Amino acid sequence: MSEKMQIEIDRAVNKFTPPMEIGGGFLTREDFKTLARQAVTDGTFIGWTHAENMTRERMQRKIDAAEHELTILRERVKEVEMELLAAQK
Image (tube, rainbow, N blue to C red; front, side):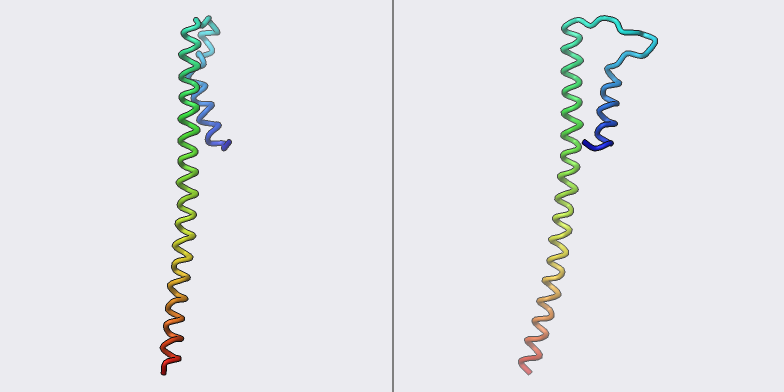
């Protein structure tokens, strides 16, 4: 897990933690279910967002590599064309 992702998770957890001056208090079963549902939902969104960003970055690297390979192939085709023209003369 990345440090940035952990920071976002910690922020989400802090949203559910009461301020120090309020103290603990008691949660009802419904309060607990609501908090747990929201925490899991937020965690899922954080993970999904980071996975999408990682996928986008990985695909961009693949695109960049393919474009570089295409450039090399185009240069090689030009070289072969020049060799072919030179051989015909």
